[in-house]
Amino acid sequence: MRDLFLATSLNPKAILFGGTIFPKAAFASGVAWLQAMGLFLALVFPIGLLWVGLGARSSAPAAWVR
Image (cartoon, rainbow, N blue to C red; front, side, top):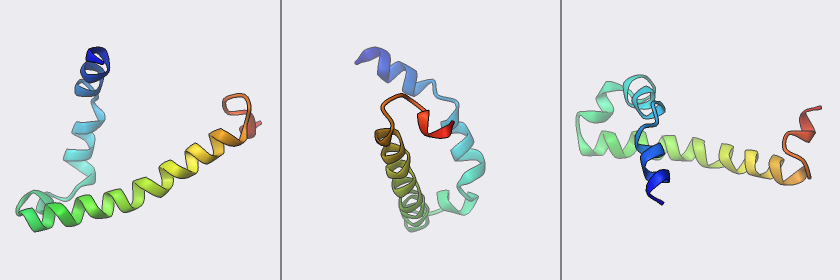
């Protein structure tokens, strides 16, 4: 569990999300932050489910790509 926490903490994608994907206005107020995070989750959740579903369809990883 400690190794997973450390790997997550050192993930450079967090800087990318904070610096480029979310608008600067998202950090100006709590309401704007909640709106940005809500939109982000509304987009990420179905995309994640799609990837999980595609992975579950194949018995071998990435077999559906061939």
